Image 1: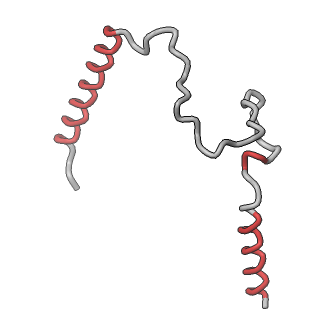
Image 2 (image 1 turned 135 degrees about the vertical axis):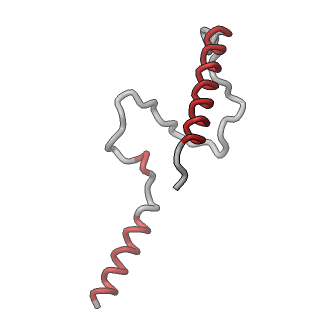
Image 3 (image 1 turned 90 degrees about the horizontal axis):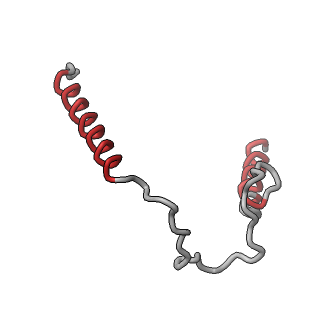
Length: 87
């Protein structure tokens, strides 16, 4: 009898979870979160582009420096893997 009651409770909780979206709950919303639209569109806005950037993500000198650091890290990891004891 207790097993049936537990099963009914679990089923009701799982179905109750489908009735509302987590985003609609009044708890846990950060103060700087954007307002939700009153009507949710059927399809996402795929043609809306983000605003253009004020500056380039990386200048060529920064990109070259980061690439060198990544290559050095890769070489260091491959050397460490070759010298480590396989178990």
